[in-house]
Image 1 (cartoon, rainbow, N blue to C red):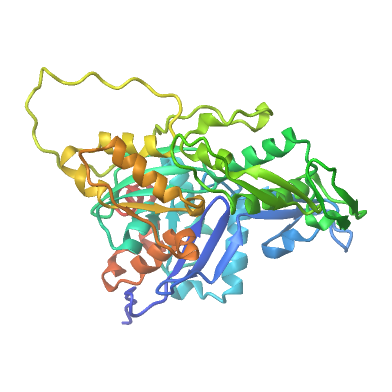
Image 2: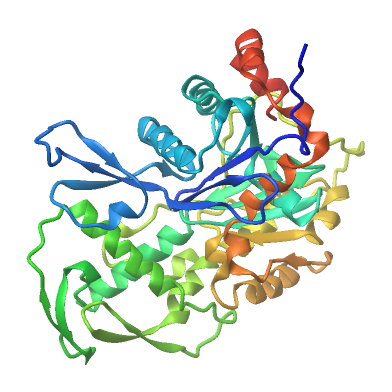
Length: 443
């Protein structure tokens, strides 16, 4: 009787890492994913055959302007919000990669803040929709720790929708000590949009520009537009790409600096605008420093605390402490926490025996972490805020590697020969049930 062994040497597992901005899919053991796709999709109302059924469009095709093409997100804060479209997109790329599902298991990364009901739906959807030989859910910070080869670390993920700080001990995330805010890439994009609105600068996507004459603000933009019929969601999606390019030239200033760092940025209309890139980037560390003129673009105050409903959470052993009547007064509640405050607060809540080890292994990852001088400022502030700890930051220099770090860690994890007993088969899912699998296998 033939037995299937899902060992790293025998199979080629699939790694799926879905983020709010991009989704990455590829093979375990590879250095980089085969597919890096937008986490948005297009829904076209009707097509050339006069069919009124909405048709979904994935990949680069969503950047082609068409009438009645609505652009919609698949995920929000790294959690799937449109299940039908997300599963359809995954199947679309599985077909492109010619994946033989019955012969290959799949490792899916997940954020730490997924509720129990969400995780149940994720497992059920993958087992019911697809026919993979096995499935494993891995938390993103755990994957990052494997990519760096550091089983004990503090993972600081500065992404598009969220900024999270997660302690990882022996490869397992400590959920109760983790923190998350929304002051990430989307927050910066909203700042840039508000900044340009205040300056009354016209922002038009490239696809609408027919001709342009170079001008410099405050001179008005001189351009002609094409007569193209599109939806507002398509225009907004293309504008987000402009704000994304804007963020690539931001730079984090030194703390309490008064100097400015003007930089010229050319918009698709041909108009160049000089802006202080320090002012916008500084809000990563102090979100309250930028005052929004358009209240609709502002974010509500967030101090980073998250309420996670997941059963059977791992808790490391703590030493027994004696009662101390001279305990310090608890710190006052804070409404808004920037990046440094988020990390400092997380370190203060961790058991004192683990604190030094984690402070010495702080991994900085995520697309927004590539903002110039961010790690230098972070190191200085953390060292000043935690004089008793030796702070050490680990941030890979390769930008592609930094953005895809969770995927690469999943690739390392799934290609280990000792990982074969971790896969959960469809037979085991049907026999044990989703509750038992989540509580005993996917911690």
